[in-house]
Length: 250
Image 1 (tube, rainbow, N blue to C red):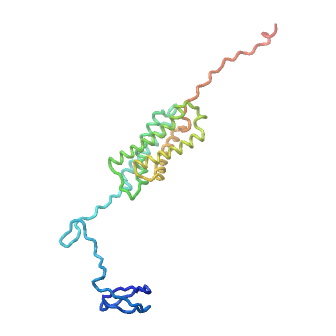
Image 2 (image 1 turned 180 degrees about the horizontal axis):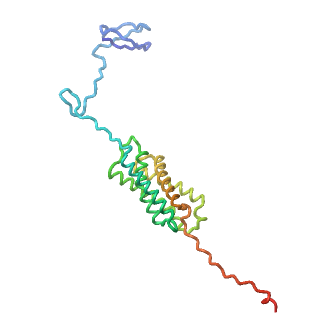
């Protein structure tokens, strides 16, 4: 069995026969005297010992637990798709309701759509390196996240109403853009806190919900920049009829 030796002078590596073990000799490259290590001084690397139960031959009897992949659930995907079709049909029906869809119904829809949309986005945006949430724990988390998303719509519509602002005063570009920045920040944090996804991915998660709800609002004919109270109509003033020439002349 050959012994691997490294010359301390030129650092060249070469093998020597085990019959020279424990002896010295010159390096064939630089002639530096080299001490050949003994056979028992060699390093032997042993395989790691099994930590679990073993059979009579030392083999492990328990197999590692396989990770259950839940990235895509066809049944749940079908249910979400069917729900999307139903929501679209309802939106089309509400479009032709006289006076437009009732505001309470719009907010109820924003809250009801939250959990399934959060679930659908989580299935594709979650971190594959982390164990996915499942069962009751998953639905509690997507439910909490969906409620936060619905509250964002409620606040967006409620601020102008509470301040009794007109449409021109409330829905300026500064309000819409400023609120959108805050909304994406809150939405990203909500998804990060409830579903353990990165903040950047959380913003995409909230954006998915926002796009779907805005699309349904567009189908219903809802003007998303007109949530402020209507201005009171001006009372027409009674005009005095013009005097006739006969009334003017004496």
